[in-house]
Image (cartoon, rainbow, N blue to C red):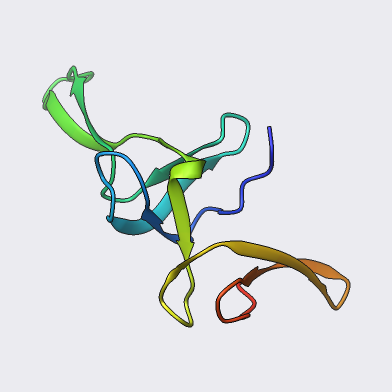
Amino acid sequence: MAKLNVKKGDTVVVISGQDKGKQGKILAANPEKGRVSVQGAAMITKHVKPRRQGEAGGRIETEGTIDASNVMLVCPKCGKATRIAHQVVDGKKVRVCKKCGKVMD
C-alpha cells in the first residue's frame, strides 16, 4: 500500500461520494488500509448496549472511514484543495502545496 499524503489533524475536503464538498479535520488515518476518518463526513449509526448499571444505551452517530483517494488536502495559505508535492528542505522531506508552493509540515 502506498503512503498517504494526508495525516491526522490535516484539514481536507471530500471530493467524491455522498459527502462530496464537506470539509473537516482528519480524526484518524489508517495507511495499511488506505482509509481516513473525517470529522462530520461518512456518519454511521452504532447501536450500543449499556455495559454498566445506570449507563444509557442507544444509537450513537459516529464518523466512518473514507478511502484516502476521495479526500484532498486544503492548503492553509491559499485555502484551496490541492495536490501535494514532496521536496527536501534542510535535509528533511516535507509536503508542499502545488498551487502556492507553501510548505505544509
